[in-house]
Amino acid sequence: MSPVAGYTCVMVPDPLSAEARVTRAEIIERSLQAVADRVGDPGQQVYARLFELLPDSEPLFVRDRQGQVRAEMLQRAFETVLDLVRDGHFARGMLHAEYVNHRQIGVPHGAYDVFFTAMVDAFRTLLGPDWGPQEEGAWRSVRDEIAGIVQRAEAAFNGTAT
Image (cartoon, rainbow, N blue to C red; front, side, top):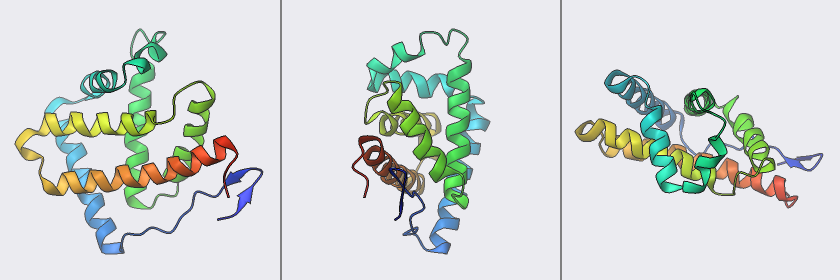
């Protein structure tokens, strides 16, 4: 990895084989479509779970009376996850930059992990018996990959990136 003005490059070799990436992408896409087919917009369930897991995050949305910020944030999360499981050209940089931006406005370290955990928890609940080991494994892999990106972003935020 090469440092540039205090930041570490976020393009890291993907540990998954090409075949495993395709399979993971198919599972993630299928589960997102299943959630959309079942409830349309899962925002209410995702944010209810987020505020349950991280109550201190709810006041950060105090000005979002109509839910537009939450809807936009969730849409960006979906786009980012889909890009990450496909080619990741956009996702890695987006996650890194947005993590640093969010930390600068006071979002605590660990909140990204909790957000994606809340999303997965909501999907698991919404899909019930249609959620199985494949979905669990694929989403765990995505969350692990995001956690690695966030770890590098946190190091950049703290000035400890190598």
